[in-house]
Length: 159
Image (cartoon, rainbow, N blue to C red; front, side, top):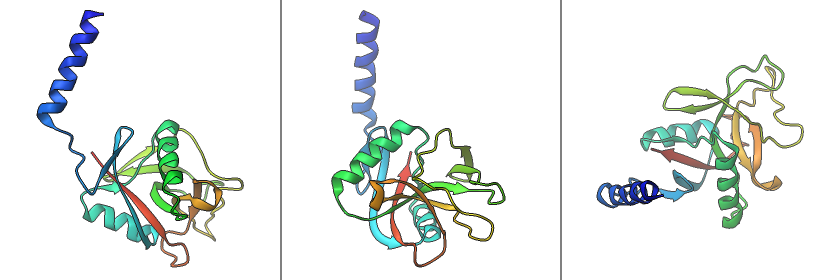
C-alpha cells in the first residue's frame, strides 16, 4: 500500500514539473490530446490539415477511447460529422481492411463500431475514410475521402 502511495506521489510530481503537453487549441479528453474542428472539409483535406498541424487524424484504438469521444461529441450538440483516422486499405475485401493511421504507421482495428450496413464501400464505390456520423449518435460510418458531398469536421490528435 505504501509503495502505491509513493508511486502516485511521484507521478503527480512529475506531471507538475513536466507539465501537460496538451496545450490550446488542443484539449485533454480521457487520455488523449485532441483538436476538434467544426470546419467542413473532405476526408483527404482533414488528413492534410492534421498533418500540417504536426498531428494526425484521431485514432481510437480501444472501444473505451471511442466511447469517451462519442460522449464528448454528443455533449457538444453540433450536429456535425467528424473525420477520424480510420482508413480502409483494401477495398477488394468485402467490408474492407480497416486500419488506424498514425504518423505513417498502420494499426489493425481491434473492434468495429460501424453503423448498420457499414462499412459498405467497394472497389466500384471506394468509401475508404471514416467519420463519427452525427445522424446516428456518432457511430462510425465509411465515406468517400475526396468527394465534396461528404464534408465534415475533423478531430486531430497529438502525443
